[in-house]
Amino acid sequence: MSTKLELLKEVEKSFYILEMSDDWDEDGAKVISPEVFNKALLLAHFLISEVEGLDIFDINPCRDGSVDICFKNEKTKYRLLINITINHFKYYGDNGNDKDVIKRGVNLLSEERNKKDLIKWCREFMVS
Image (cartoon, rainbow, N blue to C red; front, top):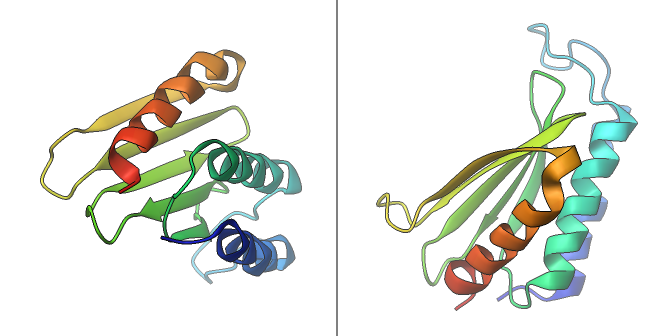
C-alpha cells in the first residue's frame, strides 16, 4: 500500500507534462493545457484524500490533449484508469478478468454523484 506522501511524489513527477509542446511525440500529439492538467491533479488529490490505502498510480499525457490517471492494487489486481479532458472525465476499472467492472463517462457539470460512485467502488475493490 502506498502512503499519501508516495502518491504525492508521483504527482510531483508529473509536472514535466506542463513543459511539453505540440507534437511532443513527433507524431502530432496535442499539448496538454494547464487547465486539463490541473483538473487531473485535483481529481487525483480528491481520490487520494477520500480513499485511504489507494495503491500505485501514474499520471500520463495522452495524444489528444487529455491526461490519464492510472491506479492499481498489486494485491487485489484491481486497476482503475481515469481519462480527464477539459469538459469531462471517463473511467474504467476492473480486476483484469472483467469482474466487478465500473465504466462511466462524466460531464464535469454532473460529476459530484459520479465521484461518490467512484469513491464507493475504489473503497470496495481498490483497497485491500
